[in-house]
Image (cartoon, rainbow, N blue to C red; front, side):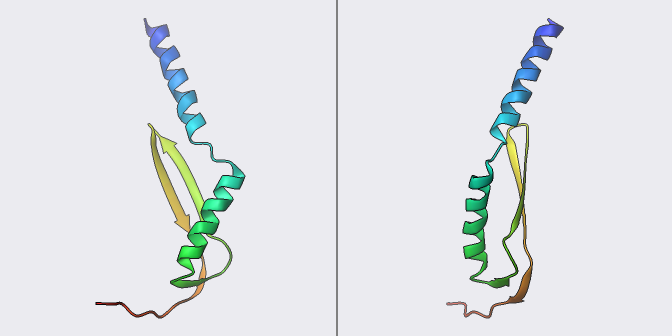
Length: 77
């Protein structure tokens, strides 16, 4: 029985690892989209960076970027 449970755990681990893979072209597209949005508020230096991890079927996404300045904008009331 323990061998069967270990086998299922290995299969689950492989499936979870498979789901967490993001191609380089997909990642580049996502980062370009974020850069467009962030550029509304900041003057970016280069593209943002993204770290993507998957644990137990839940993704953790960390975005970081460098900016030369924060843009001034009006908040509508």
